[in-house]
Image: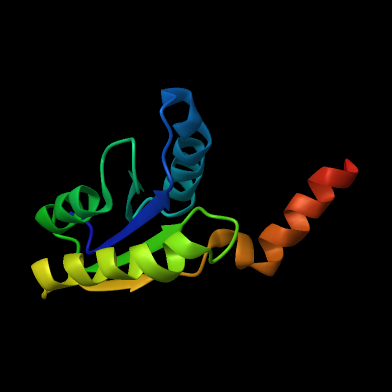
Length: 121
């Protein structure tokens, strides 16, 4: 049982194959941090929801959870919807420290990796 968990949080889509990249990121995070429970959650159209992923992590013993939005930017969902969802899960799990990261696309390393991909490096 891991005391830490990382929930990769993606938008979701009707096509189940859309989740493939998020699941590959989760597998790589798990490879890099085998001591941490890693899961994927979705805002809409797919399961599990953020609340369900946090519930599962807390039930397995996680007390420090990091929610990492797999979004390119801090748009409307991350400015309005996600903070409300985070407050809801914090209220349901007061014994857990639940931190929300900025959108992954806001990280300079991610920006550089996307630029390198675009130019074919």
